[in-house]
Amino acid sequence: MCKNKIQDVSMINTVIPLVIGLIIGILITYFFLQKRISSVEKKFRQTDELQNEKVIAETKLLQNVQYIEEIKLEKVKLEDTISILREQLEKQKEESARLETKVLETEKNILEQKELLKQATESLRDTFNALSSDALKSNNETFLKLAKQNLETMLEKTKSEFGKQAIEETLEPLKISLERYNREIKTIENLRKEDLGSLKEQITQLANSSENLKKETASLKNALKRPEVRGKWGELQLRRAVELVGMSEYCDFSEQVSVQTEDGQLRPDLIVYLPGHRSIIVDSKAPTKYFMEAYEAETEEKREAAKIAYSRAVRHHMNELSKKNYWKQFEDAPDFVVLFLPGESFFSAALELDNKLIEDGIQNKVIIATPTTFIALLRTVAMSWQQQKLTENAKQIAETGTELYERICTFQEHLDRVGSSLDTSVKHYNKAVGSFTNRIVPSVRKLEELGVQQTKKKLQETQKIDTNPRAISSE
Image (cartoon, rainbow, N blue to C red):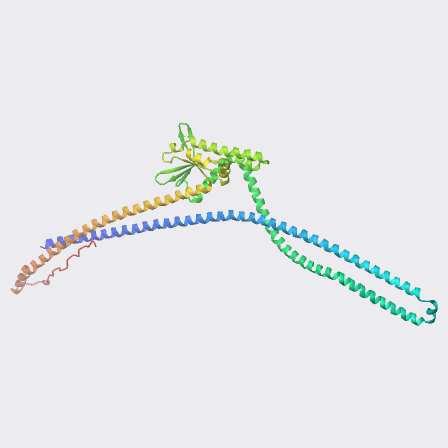
């Protein structure tokens, strides 16, 4: 019995570390899964933040383009304002000249009236001298002096009042007009100074912007005249489009991938990878030669001829691209190829004279794309990748959860076995204790009563174990 008890205790000591190890393993697995889920959530948040930053950058780019358009419209408005101010200034000059002429005419009238008054005074003096006689003059000098004084006083008074009144009546309307004119001139001058100051600053800014734009346009125009530069420029615009969406090279796309075929070597400009091991072939074309010739043409005939040549060049590129059959050389590619034109104006100019370009392109399995439509296509691809990653992560989480559930079920089975073993061990232990208490202890007590020599050790009472192992519930 003691041997069985020792074996049960040894079994318990062996099982308990196993149980503890299994619990620790479950906890480690749980924390590992929590850490992995947190890492996945963190990556999702980082992806959302990057998408938000890209949207902000695109918005700023569109705002800059809109700001340039607003500056152009403001320039046109300012030019109209300058024309209006010039017309007003010309009208004010005409009004000033008219008023000056009126002033000169008034001054001339005043001089004429003064001359008439002078002539009348001299005539009165001559008449008075003729009427006075020598006798009267000699006999009554006092009377003559008094009469002369009175006459001169009357003449001066009449002259003064007549001249003053005439001048005032003549100049009063002119004075009012001149005062009103001066006020209007001062108001217009102040407004003109303010407007011209602001206008000068804005014109300076527009001139600087126009000058920089002219330099950049001239530099770009000269550079695009060379075929190798045109090709590099188209590839650069293509790469900027994929980077703007947030794609990474060799992960989401590849450039200049060479493929050897029976007809020779094919090297598309770009391969965009899709979920499900699929890909889209993109070829960039920049037929700017005829486009620039149309832009620089001096006559309407030359411009129309260059436009027709440009439209034919775009169709020629489309037909040549269709003949390459990229979808046959790349098994994972859909049955179409994307022809990328590096500007909206390039596509609209070609479509203006060839309105069947899109329809014929679809029939020839060639999709013509501009930066705007291509970015929209890439955004759809990016969303597909996000959905693919979410699906893969969800699948991994489901597989890990299933595996964890199976392991927990297995662990429960082991615990059930351990519980059964513990229950059996407790029962055997209680039986051994009962046998020891009922059979051995009475004999030992009897020996003590008979005077058997005792040792220092005393026989202790052995207790049974009444606690049963707790059953594991699945609820």
